[in-house]
Length: 411
Image 1 (tube, helix red, strand yellow):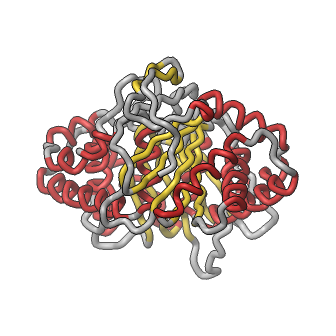
Image 2 (tube, helix red, strand yellow):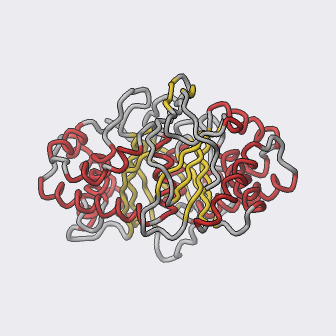
Image 3 (cartoon, one colour):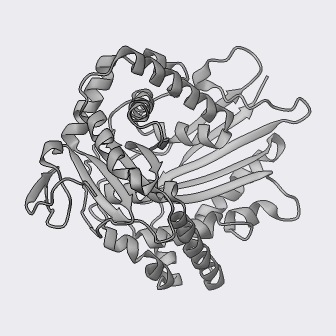
C-alpha cells in the first residue's frame, strides 16, 4: 500500500509528546495526524475518516466546513461513499471505498485538507447542503432538541438560514485553527497496523450549567430559531422533552471508564426492558416514543433522555424523569438489570464493529478523546468484567442537574 514512509520520532501535539514509532506519519502533512488501523476480517469496504476539532467554531460554520470537505473530496474521487457527521467539539467526514482503491483516496483527502482557499462554487454548494442538514434536524424532534441542548453550552442558537451567511474568510479561519490544533485522519484497512496513539484535543469551553429551554410551537409565523415544525395532527397535541448532560467534568483529567458508560447507557435506554421505557410504560402508557443513551464525545460522556408524549401527560413524564435520576444518583440499580445491560452493551459494540461507517465514527471519537486503540480492542472483555457496584458508583457521580429542553404546541 502506498502510505507515507514510516518514521520514528516524537511529535508535539497540544503540549503532549506522542511516541510515533509505529505510526505512518507524513512530514508533508504535519498538521494531519494519520492513523492506520485494521478492519475486521469480514469487512468488505475500507474507510477513510477525517475528524476536525472545531471547539469554539459556530455550528453554522461547522456545517458548511464538513459539507465543503465532503464535496471537494467527492470531486477528486466520486466513487467513494461519503457521509458527514457532527459531535461536541468536532465534525467529521467518512468515506467508504473498496480496499483496492484506498491508495488513491487517501492522497485526495490530504490534498483537499491542505487546500488553503476554497472556490466560490464549493462554498455555495456547502452552504446549501448545510441548510438542508438543519432542515432534516428540524423534522426530527429528537435531533432538534438534542442540538438545542448541546448549543446551550456555548449560548448559540439554531437558525436554519445562518449557514447561508457563512463567509469564505470564516471557513479559512476555522481551517487554520483546526490545522494548528491538528486534525485526525483515520484509515481502516485490512492491512492496517495495530496502533494506539493518544490524540489530545484542548477543551476550552466551560463546564455547562443546567438550563431549562422552552420552545413554543404553533401554526403562525414563528422565528425559525424557536420553531420545531413536525407536521402535527390537528386532533392531537404533543409535547417533546429532552434532558441532557455530561457525565464527567470537562476540566477533569480522568474521565469515567467508557465500558461502564456503555453498560449504563443500555441500562437507561436499551430496549423495552430499560429503566426509562419501563417507567413510561406502566398501567397507562405515557409516551409514544421514548429514547435514552450514553455516548462518548471529545468532551466526555454525553447523557440524553428523550420522550414524546401528549401535552396532558407532560407533567407526569417530567416527574418520572426526575424520579429516575434521583434513584440513579442513589445507586438504586439491581444486579439483574446490570447483567441485562452488559449483554446489550456487548451486542451493540459488536454491531458497531460490523458497520464500517459506525466503526469509523466511533473509533475517530475514541482516539480524539485521547484513548488508545489497545483499549478499544479490549472493550468486550472490559464489559464482561464490570460489576454492579461499578455501575452504582458511576450512577452516584451523575451530574446533579441536567439541561432540560421542552418543545410544546401552542396557539
